[in-house]
Every structure is written in structure tokens, then in C-alpha cells.
Amino acid sequence: MKHIFKKLPFTKNGQFIFKSMLAGMLIAMAGGTYLNCADKTIGAFLFSIGLIAVLVLEANLFTGKVAYVQSWHTFGLACAMLTYNILIAFLIGLLYKGLHFPEMQGGGPFGPDSARMAKEWYRMLFDGFGCGVLIYLAVELYKKTKNVIPVIICVMAFILSGTEHCIADAFYLGASTLSLKAFGYLGLVIIGNSLGAVAAHWLHVGADKAVDNLNINK
Image (cartoon, rainbow, N blue to C red; front, side, top):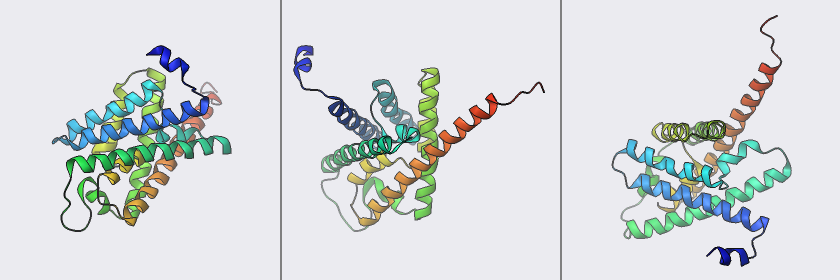
């Protein structure tokens, strides 16, 4: 098997695409696991395997990378990453719906996205912001400790507190009734996740520099 992979024409661009698709798949599978758990706490705990796998396998997850955008080039990479993440998660959501919800009855929001559609638009933006902060914390704490426990805690916090993760929401959208409102809400969550992660990163970097310049002995 190793010889087969060595002969394949892998490039840096190909690696980027594969890692981005992998991240979308991992988060979608985590979302599917959560939906199949009757107990939300257990589901939130098991969902964390998705982000743990992303970090250990070094997959390209938009919400884990967007805080570190520093140029137009990295901004473009983040947008491409987001596209692949959402596309794969959404397609897996469609497959999930086909397998678990073969018959849709009645109107209005259907399936796992119904609670989200009941929120006000500003609540979606705010919940996206909160999740962006928590995902940034999970990534930074894992980088510094190489311990998955902070990752589990952050993931459980964002799920049980009701905040929104855009890649997971893309999966839930695919598994639900499609509507313009649902797609619009997904856009709001993307913005919220980005703002939350960037804000947390800037405050973190600013705090580090402030401490470096502080002499408490004066």
C-alpha cells in the first residue's frame, strides 16, 4: 500500500485539498455521532473525537486556522479551506439524511436544524462568536500541552452551551430541510466563528506582548 501512495502524484496543492476534505469529513462524522446519542452530554463528549482527530492528523479545519490569517494569501487559503470543509460536511449530511430520514413529512425546518432555525439572526452570530473563541482555545491549549483533555472540555463547552460551529452546521444543514434562511444562518455562523477566533487570538497575542513589556519589580 505504501508503494501505491508513493507513486501517486501528490503535490502541495493536492495535500492542502485532501487535508481540508479530511477535516470536513471528521467534523461531519462527529456530528453524526452526536445526533445518534440520546444523552447530549455523552454526545458532546464523543463529538470531541472529531476535533482531536483534526489536531492529531493535522487536518485543515477552517475554524482552527482562521485566527492565524495574516495576509491576503493566507486569507485566500482560509477561504479555500472553508469551501472544502463545508462541501464535504454538507454532502455527508445529505447522505445521512438519505439513510436516516427517507421520508420527510410536514413543512418547516426538519431534523437536526430545527432548533437553529428558531433562533434570531443576531443569536446565530453571537453563538458563532462564542464557538470561535472556544475552538481557538482548544487549538492553542493542545499546541501548548499536547493533551486532549482541554480539547474535550472546549468542545463539550461549545456544544452544551448551544454555540454554533459552521462546519458542523453545514453537516446539520445537509441532514435537514434546505432553505434560504438556513444557508443565510450558516453564513452568519461563519462570520461569528471567524470574529471569535480572531478576537481571541489578538487578545492572546496582545496579552503576551503586554506581559513581556511589564516589569513588576519597578
